[in-house]
Image (cartoon, rainbow, N blue to C red; front, side, top):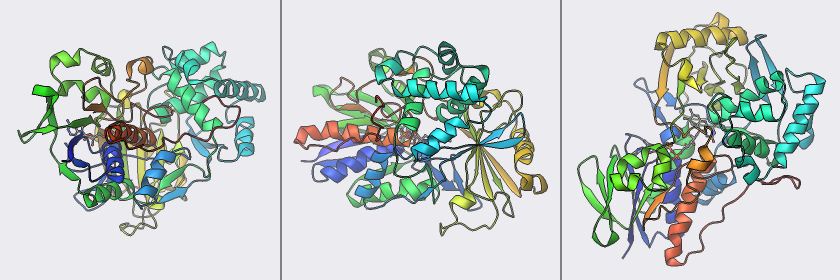
Amino acid sequence: MKKRVAIIGGGLSGLSTAAHLLLAAPEHYSIELFEGAPFLGGQCASWLDAKGRPVETGIHLDFPWYHNKDALFAAIGRPLPLKETDGNYYVCNGATGKIDTLLAGKSVFKTLRGLATFPGLSPRERLQLTGLIWRIMRMDDRTAESFDHLSVEEFLDTQQASPAIKHQLALEAVTIQGLRAEDASAASFIKFLRTMYGSMGKFDTTFFGAPLSDALINPLAEFIISRGGQIHLGRAAKAVTRGPAGSLHLLTSNQQVAQFDHVIFAIPGYAVPPLLPVELQAQPPFVFLTRLSETPIITITLWYEAPVFQDGNVYISQRDRTYGPIFDAVADKAHHWKDWPGLNTKGSILQVLIDAADDVAHLTDAELIDRSLQDLARFFPRCAGNKPIDATVLRLKNTYCGTRPGFWSHIPRQHHTGIAGLWLAGDYTDGVYHYGMESAVISGKAVANNILQEINHAGFEILHPDYLPFVRP
Ligand SMILES: Cc1cc2nc3c(=O)[nH]c(=O)nc-3n(C[C@H](O)[C@H](O)[C@H](O)COP(=O)(O)OP(=O)(O)OC[C@H]3O[C@@H](n4cnc5c(N)ncnc54)[C@H](O)[C@@H]3O)c2cc1C
């Protein structure tokens, strides 16, 4: 008889768990995936709005070291529609109103040139920064995590970083960790920079050539259904309890209770404890999950009649508190989607992302749109002369577990919960620096590998970034 598996959460980690189990042993597993929202994808979702236009949670970049994600899509026969950037980062400098280019990419020489010409730093500071990056690349995980109690800002103080270096590196904290440098864990910062500067990719950073659901989510869902998996939309898990003889019972929002051999939480860590009986909430690993919390993010979509951006670059900023801009990333999705058959406009579709948004969350939608338009006009001349025909504001809920100081001592280091059949997946549990699409996919793969041991299946290899020889991963 097939083992019954319930997966709670239809984001990338839940879909990855289901797809890996069904790739390996569809004859052994009967899979039901429960998603509380009316659509799949979670933080990686896109949908059509009331006017039939594609709306996404926000800009998603795919990094060249996302090997597990690429391997999954190759395995299900649906290679990702990736569009390569030129590798550089384009930084909106609030103090000057200009866009600085930070050279980066797959070539080591270009990356070194990027450090030697790092915007906003004196030649001496660039040398200091190169030394800092070198030290970071030589740090192993243990050393990186010894700085977990510090914020990025405090860590940079220990490294005698100048105010200009600190200011420039705040870019990473805001755009990657979704937090300000004073709120973000130094360990995650170190792990990200080590991977960015210390690993070689076959291609530059990419974006997707179709909205997230078409690019990522639907192919996985179609594969799961084609192998007999069931997907229940709009059916949230309400409680997981243990029955007699260790069976697991899942209560869902339609008030039905069903029994399963395995239950996998593929939801953000902070959302797991409320679904468990009180006595379990107080036990490890669940008690640590109560200390995690989400990161506030706002995504504004601006619809234009004409093109206002020349290219598909993602323009970033460190959200300077004095000079702005209000956004930390903006890109024209119409460029990204130009080969996607569903695109039905010739104008720009600007996605304006505000990470670490707690300081602007009190603004009304109209104020957020107004501030975004003013800032766009400062950096992009065509935005000054063109008004969007429409604008939508998405205040994202249930986003990723922010990597705040102490994060690495709170998260579980294994997927097993200590309760037979009960597992943790999710982007917060795994990955090279935590949170992100690759971490979500790896977590699903790792949970599937754990479960597959019961049928003596060897599981799937977890792939690692291709680190340069002198980097200590
Ligand atoms: C705006 C934004 C931009 C991002 N940019 C990038 C990027 O550039 N690169 C990158 O790698 N990553 C990026 N990420 C992060 C990436 O999207 C996430 O790390 C990844 O999608 C998380 O997948 P997950 O399955 O672990 O969690 P989630 O996507 O959060 O999925 C969890 C799912 O569980 C559902 N759920 C919750 N509670 C219940 C319940 N009780 N019952 C049933 N279902 C439930 C939720 O509705 C959700 O669908 C970004 C995230 C956001 C929000």
